View 1 (cartoon, rainbow, N blue to C red):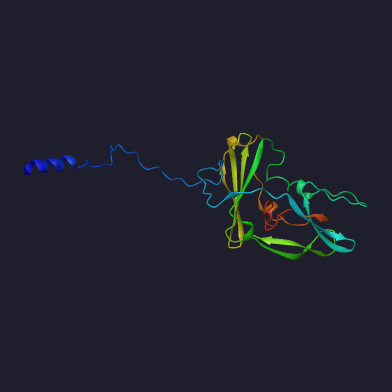
View 2: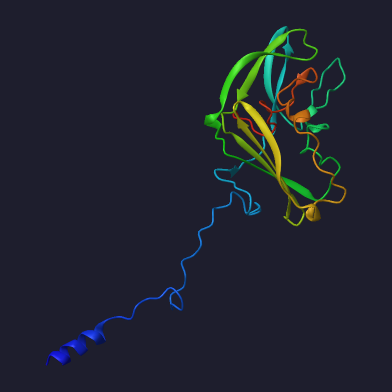
Length: 225
């Protein structure tokens, strides 16, 4: 009788699960979510989200003897009745496209950041305006510590060929190219010039009226748009 009970217990005992040769598939490997479908998988992109680059810039001048402030679309020029038209500087070299891409064909730029508009400090300040003879009131803004901006360049087949990133640390911006694929780059592309030579002019006045878009070394992000 005892032997029958023991046999029944043995028959009900499930077979041990082994690590090797187990019929159960291994658990899936969790990979970090990429900020964009074309983002190079080997590059960390935590917290980055795509955004639409700004299409406006400040236009600061004196109208009827008083300071005036307007937001101008990048396709709008300064037309005067008694003076030659002044073309929007944001459509001129080197401000109109990503660095090093002037004259290149078959590419596009995808912008990403970890900054929300509410994170940006905005204030009014008297700004130096070329040709005005005095400072005039306009807007300034400053990005927070840890702000990161990414410029992902892809070819006409949507293949990434360069990823540029700029991060603010200890109050200073650090720019670097974190990914390159020369085989996917447009014909004739030689790489970007020194970033600071252009980005330091974001939000500056190069002519009377319309200013270079952006501020705090970033052209493409406007917290007031």
